Length: 159
Image (cartoon, rainbow, N blue to C red; front, side):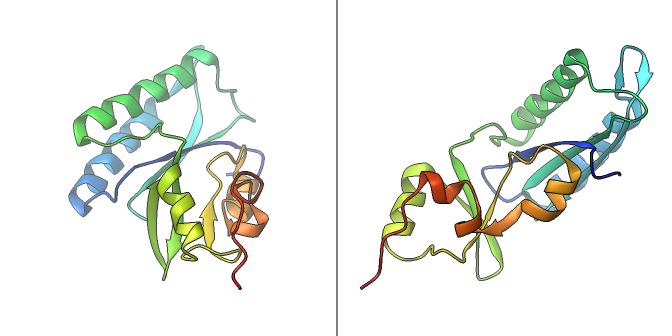
């Protein structure tokens, strides 16, 4: 995929099992193979990262993703939510790495982790708002201090 390809990152509120990941992988293979916009095949791909993130990628040099085609992807994600009893649309569920393990917490719990010192300026967080593949590769997993999180959440100074 080229670096200008559009990206949508969907984060599960929990870790997916190996079986769930395999089933979702198969669903995404089928979806991306048949994903169209205005009857044109989209050059689409996907990644499943850390058994938690579903990433859709569209290289729009061949055909652009339209509102209807994006709606199709959202519909698929809603179906996956129901099938696996997960939440993929909670933007207030914050993902971070703790000892190389990806965890997530609701906004309030994330704030408590900051207050407790469990999250610091070097904690890796995930910027699921990256708009393109280049940013996804370079700025999706970043230290807290380099992310939008630093603008929203105040780190407590440790004395």
